[in-house]
Image (cartoon, rainbow, N blue to C red; front, side):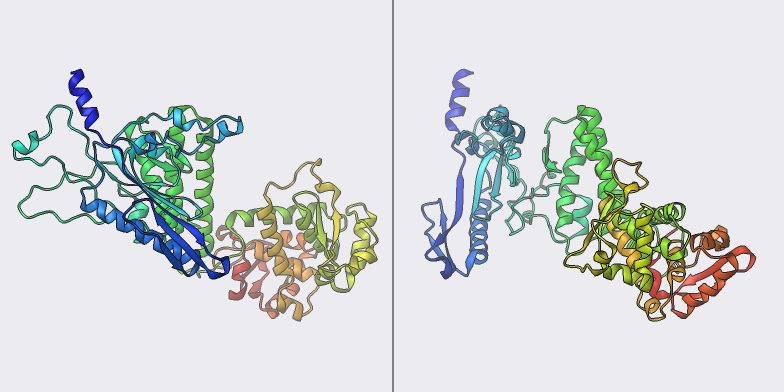
Length: 547
């Protein structure tokens, strides 16, 4: 047995390596690069046209070698791992070990094993390509390494030639060797079908050779044993097996989605939901808390993606609508509209004066300082909101202590966009109880929404006052997908609540609603039976907040 094992080891040959690289040539202004290959038969080339032309030439050269390898039978199952021959210096370092100051741990931590695979590696700078015969474990330990083909396992019992004596081929046909594209540097080859791969033609599978007439059908393609997803390598021995296959397929599906020419939010949300379930199970199996955190992030990403889809389509995903609603790209998502209504309620309860001008100023300044209690304004902002009342209202807010300024009111009114004034709202400072739970992106989106409503061109042209602008804000924030006011079961908005927010007697709401109709904000308005019924005009639908 020892003699037989030693003989088999002596028969194994070193894994082949092809290295193609680009280097500058001549003066930088000349725009020429040098293309060199490690194979002695390949002469150096001078490529003009800059780095882009050089990369195209290098990729073409790599594909030429891959075609020859395919014609020669693909990777050799008897080859030694070329990465191991290089002391596993190609492995991607472990970031935690590098922070501790240690050497590359991958060479010692990853033992060679698995079938011999043919891989292609491309560095992120687009200057080096490496085709290699190595073991599957080393391939999994190298970032940006793409597996193109897998060699069949060596026979452990039958000596060489036994297959031929029985009239059987010595090697079963394996997967065809693929080619490398410009976007193939950071992805693995897709050996298993996936939802995203089926939905796009941007990442097509490698072309398989046609079966010969009269020959038996080729063996089914073997499932991938390893892969990557979310910058993590899926362990080849992960149990249960269905989880390992799901993670590998998901990684391929996400990479295929990135190659799509157009986004598909429904597909992306589905992928995030699958990822959340798979990572939650992976966390249960391994006990890794970071995996559970990743699962929660994926679940949140799925929810956000569905909201984006609903926002683009004009209705919330899952609604049983008739399909007659207009398709509108809305400024606020459903959740952001919820936060906007929270801000409106907060301002109605905490404005220091019941004047409409003060409430409008408090609302706009609150949105500027909602996250940290501080924000920037200019005199142009204030006059755009309040016209001639801006200086008086600002002085009232400073006198009551609701607002702090670094200088005088006159200096604020004179400030411009290139030198805005920093304001402070003490009740919104971080040490105070937090009235809002949204992030900086949502704050900016709601603030922009309010600015668009208050600064609407037809409202400005009609010179409507603060009361009408508050009514415009309230109606825009409380609409259905089709633009009608209030929930369907409520038949409009409560007139008392509308009047309280706009600091109006209920009987005067109708008068200001007529002003909004004249400004092409509402198509109609009815205030009978204690309700405000109406509908936003088509041009205002992008500013509507979904109930």
